[in-house]
Length: 209
Image (cartoon, rainbow, N blue to C red; front, side, top):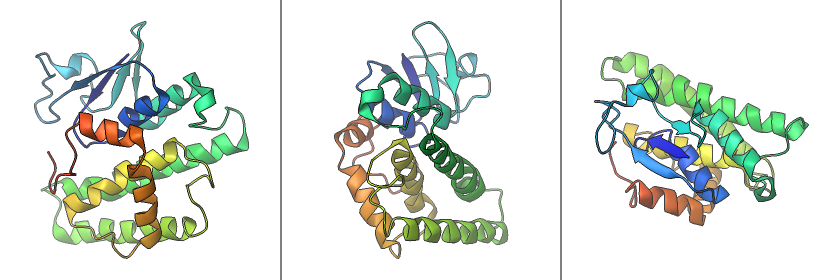
């Protein structure tokens, strides 16, 4: 398998989960701005939309969208228990968390804060949205070690990746003690450290790569 990624972006999610799964893969870096692939080539020939992540399976099948990719990976190694079995209510709960992070926090929260063309008045709307979402998560984690309860899952990796971006947009997480504790638990995992080291993210950069 080949994972196409950009340092510190949403593609860090499947990068972590591949390490969690112990699945052999090649990690190929791209430049998010120029779409140039490490070693040469145009990433848009892999994914015409030009964004990461993309996972190319050994048979040539292309998978895109992080939440879909990590569920596929998890299902290949069920003994790792990175996701509940398909068809269960717990799997639906996991999908709810993954969708929440993709829509409410990534695209509907952090993304606009990275765009230079968005005026500060507009950014304040998205900052307020993030405040509400992080408060909700912090309260949930008050009585749950991980998002799904006592067991780590791909959703926890998703929250870790998303919350990493706070420092890049001057969003203060210090008042969310339970999220901070959760981040430390996830950061301590060997797979997380391995993925971050592979992307040259240790220590975490103070600004986007």
